[in-house]
Length: 308
Image (cartoon, rainbow, N blue to C red; front, side, top):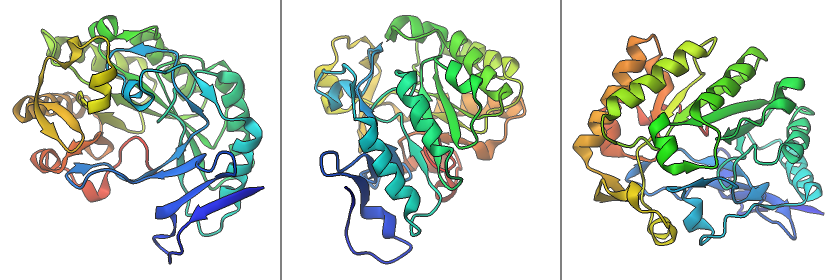
């Protein structure tokens, strides 16, 4: 039988210590709230339908999370459905987005994800977030869904060549995002991690122009991020060439210098806004509070990838 694991709390903080699952898998739906105080990252729901990823990005944090064992492992669908139904039936749970791409690539197994997406269509309160570097979208185009949000992780073509092994090219991902937009899906974009490789402004300008010119409309929101070197990720990474720019420590691992990060973010904000993108729909992923203040962004109204 499904059960809800929680402390006795009063609204509106009821969901902060809540997980939905079964006896065998007690945290299929897990509320992420472990962000250090110095880092801006709104709490969000994870849908832990699987663990691992078939792609081989040199910088992937899942290397550390799973101690190098990234081969995909799946939670049985019947347990997933029980956890979802328990959450859907919970009248105290406010409308939420369930991120299926935090511990796995959301589209790495379309056959399973199709069934999960169909489950979300049986209610109209909560939404499923797909976060992916894949272009396995045929099942989504074939049957448009109202309760599914698609989010694509993009990077400059040169970065893809250097470190995003086994993944479809950024061009193929943009094509997939375009197809889903035309099918009526809400589409979000993550450009993360942004690397200051040689001639980085030209490489990323090409990405921004390609993305906004190819898509039939602007993404619903864009989240930016720079490399984050968590201790376990650095321990398990076989290729450390992506770490060469780290000079600072933060509450979320090593980072490139504050002045360079600031330059990167200003570059992207300037380009996106000049092309007509709404500044209030741009956010930064797991950045310091100091950087949010430097960018004159309102962290209390953060519209980043994983939240409503």
